[in-house]
Image (cartoon, rainbow, N blue to C red; front, side, top):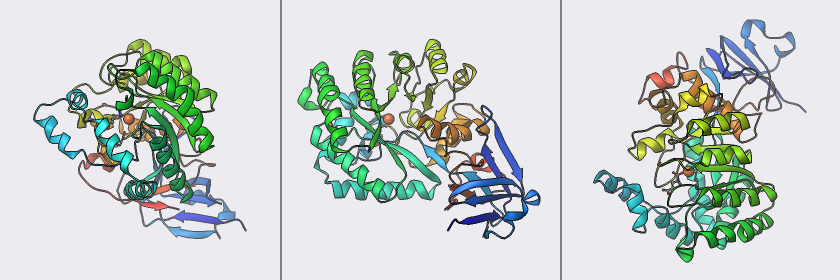
Length: 401
Ligand code: NIG
Ligand code: FE
C-alpha cells in the first residue's frame, strides 16, 4: 500500500531550488504532498491538486517547512576529552604547539584506541541524537582517530552498526588524518601503508560501508604528493576523494582536489585564486567550516564570496571534532556563514542543504521540490530569516518523518 500524506497549515515553505544555481523558492501558506516518503507536490495550499484533498493530513501548526540540514564534514566518532586544550589555547598555546607536544589529534587517538565498538556506537548515537534534534537529517562522518589498522577497523564497524540502526550517514575513510607514533619520522612509509595495505583491507572487511576517502594535506602533516597517493588509491577501490586542504597555509590542496575531480575540498581558509578557479572548473564543492575558524581563534575566514564569484557551489559544514570544533549546532554554522563568511541567508542555507547534499552525491536531499526525500524540518518562526537574526536563540524544529 502506498502512503499519501499532506502537510497543511504551514506558514510557508522555503527551499533551495535545485534547477537554478543558488536559487530559492519561498511559498506563503504552503502545502506539501508526500508519497511514500518523497515530496510529490509543493505549492500554495490554494493550488493543491484535487486528488490530494483526501490524503492523510499532518498539521503543520503554522510553522515554516524547510529541508533538514545536511552536514557534509564531521569526525563523529572519537573517544576521550580534550576540553583542557580550549583553555590552554586561551593561555596562548597554539593548536600546532599542542600537537607538537603529543597532544592534539594524538591524544584523541590514544583514547579512541581504548574504546570498544559498543562504546563507540553509544558515543555516536548520543551525538547523532543531538544533531537530529537540531534538524540535521543526514551527515558525513570520518574515521581517522584510530590511525592503526585494527583501530580504524573498529571505527568502521561502529559506523556500520550506526547505519544498521537507521542513522542516515555517509562514511569516509581517513586513516591519513595524522602521523601515528608507530610511524614517527616516516610519513612516506605511513602513506604507502595506508594507500597500499590499509585502505584495500578496510574496504574488503566492510564492503560498501565507506563511500569516500579523505586526507589531511597541511604543512607539517601530509604533502600534496601524499594526498595524491591516498586519494588515487582510494579511487581505485571505488571511494570518491574528499580532502582537508589549505587550512593553516596554502599548500595547493584545492588545486589537487580539482586535478583529481574530488567531491569536495574542505577548510580552505588559505585557498588561492587559482585553486578557486580550478575547483569551479572541475565541479569540486568547496566545503567551508566557519565554526572551526572561530573555535581556533583564527582571524581569516575562508573567502566564501570570492569562491561564489569564481563559480563555485559552496557548502558549509560543522567539522565536528574534539580539537578544532566542538560544535553540534547547525544554527551556529548558519549564523557564522552569514556573519563571518559574509554570505547571505539564502546562500548560507543553500550551502547547508542543497550543496552539502550534492557534495555527497545525494540529489534527493537538501531541498523539498518533487522527488526529494521528505525529511522536513518544521520551524516555529514568523520567517526563516529569524533563524539567523535571533543570534543566540536555541530553536528546535519538529522533524518529519
Ligand atoms: O578537520 N584538520 C584536521 N582534523 C580536524 C581536527 C582534528 C583534531 O584536532 O582532533 C579538523 O579540523
Ligand atoms: Fe575535519
